[in-house]
Amino acid sequence: MCSTPAPSHRVMVMECWVDSVRIFSHVQKLLWYHQLQWREVPAMVFYMEVGIGTVQRCLELQEENGRAEKIFRTHIHSEHSESQELAMRGLRNLYTRRMHLLLPDVLMWLQDTRADIKLQATQLLCDIVAHHPRHVQDVLSQLAVPLTSCFNEDNTELRWLSMEIFAQLLVAPGRKQLLSEVKMNLLPLFFHMNEEIPRVAQMGAAPEAAQEALTRAAELLRWQELRHLAKTADMWKLAECLVQKAGSAVEQYVQQSVWYLHSPQASVREAAVGFL
Image (cartoon, rainbow, N blue to C red; front, side, top):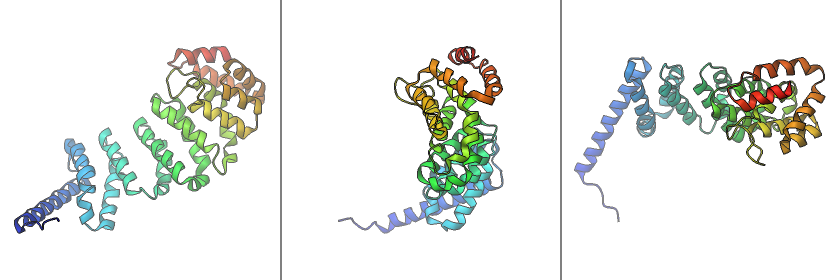
């Protein structure tokens, strides 16, 4: 049987709790009024890992959630990348079971100039698409543009994840509204299939990222030959098929190919030269 704590132990626990609440409240006030300067990051770590994780359970939840949300939203724009990451993670924690409510924020973060913010936005979007797919339907076309712009980011994971999510959207309800965006990104996806980086380029026979997205794009367009060639990764015939299907998009294909001539990866540059 568990013994009842001695009175002295209960007093110690209560004193620790009171001290923790006092520290939590002080840190929260400093974050609220931006009075931390170089101490901001450790304060955010405490607020996330200690404050929100333990002390908040003992406070008025609704009120504290409101304060926490304001602090997190403010510090997403911090000059410290660590604070940005913690703030994004904090918001995700607050909206764990209702992440779809963050879709308007995701749309905004995807257009941010900072790659780390875009990466966290795509990670959040990945969870939303997986757990709340019906809520994505109304913003499919709005998501497609910033997502496809991430295909050419320097950050490898961001490129891979944006293409993976795009592939998921191509089988989501309402996907036909993505037809114009799909046609614009056939060639970029082809070029990214030539990347040398694992998880972005196709790996062996397993469809990955760009390959999967191109395969699903062909399915949406009902271009069976393109679908087969994308699935089998027959790169030479795939390029020929894209040329044959180009139609009025020839000039667009030329412009896109010229852009990929400046890719930092030799294999992508070679693919662009070959396509031209």
